[in-house]
Amino acid sequence: MTRDAKIGIPPELKVMILSAFVIAIGFGIVAPILPQYASDFGVSAMAVSAVVSAFGLFRLLFAPASGKLTQWLGETPVYVIGLLIVAVSMIATAYAPTYELLLLFRALGGIGSTFFTVSAMTFLARKSPPTIRGRVSGAYASAFLIGNVAGPLVGSGLLVFGQRVPFLVYGAALVVAAGIVFVMLRQSRLEDRGRKEEREKATLAEAWQHRGYRAALTAGFANGWATFGLRNSIVPLFAASAFVGSGWFLDSSQLAGVALATFAAGNVAAVLIFSRRSDRFGRRRPIILGLMISAVATGLLGLAPSPLVLLLLSVIAGAGTGLMNPAQQAAIADIVGSGRNGGSVVSTFQMTQDLGSIVGPLLAGFLVDQLGYAWAFGVTGVILMFGALAWTQAPETLESQEEPVAPAQT
Figure (cartoon, rainbow, N blue to C red):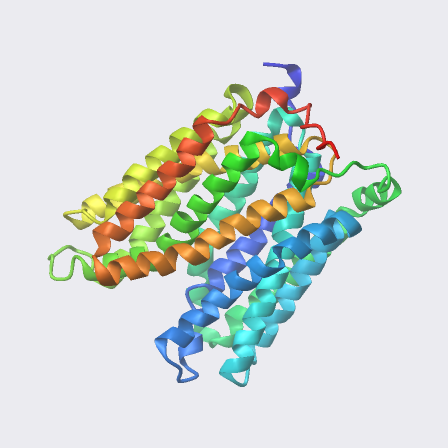
């Protein structure tokens, strides 16, 4: 291990990590409240789901634009703009007079979300020292995970002040986060602006030549399907319906929440323990192992004979995801290369993951209706295995981190 591997996380990256925590805790505050808030407009369950889906759909549609803006304006300006867009959407959501405007405001939030997500990942890829990319990705992921766990607890406490208050608090927190980033990264922003024309761009065409990038897209789609899609839509339904009358000390609705919490706990634990090890032993192995663990545990969820087994499998699936995610983000940063702006490379990865999170719940829901929960979880496990298989055919990115793929010949 080199001396550089012992260096600390640079202060400007710590600012981004702190901002990620603020964003995540705010998202956790409003996520459980939003469906009930939407249903108060007297609309159908499908219309309530559309409010949730609109956010993800517009993240997907505007991901390419976020990548181009990041290359034109730089990461931190796009990041601040994205935060402010989401802040405005949250405040507007709190006072939405009709369902149609609520849907519009959530779509607007999806646009802002993809702006700050892509710009943040691009900033981390460009600024992270190569020997600690896994640690940086792990710290960033941990901030989001811990914020998402704490958010619902804070949101439940805020509800005593009325349904609007959580949205207003989240909006205000995003304004504060935008201000912190704008002020504390001012020097970095000015330096980047002065070297803007000199900074090399990592293009999508050259990234596509790298088998590691193609594997990351495959695995990203699978992870979006399983973690951001099926996990948040089908798992709560299964937990709430499969063990009714089991006599367990938790009722079915409580079990649904605990199943998601145990997944998050396994995720956080794996990220905290293993994320920095990819800086020493490479990205490929933890990605493959994490995907395989998640695939097996997720595939068996629909066959869980008891609530205890369901929770155990949720912890294991969360640990597999936590093992894979930071290493995969570090691999993308390796492919982009130090000091290069990879807005289009990152946005395409984000778009692929978002596509999985939209397609996954729809197909899994269809399988539940036609064949049952076991098929939905089993097919998801197979999808995750395809992600692992793609990485078995890809090279280790850490070994070539300072030698990005040469541009395609024209």
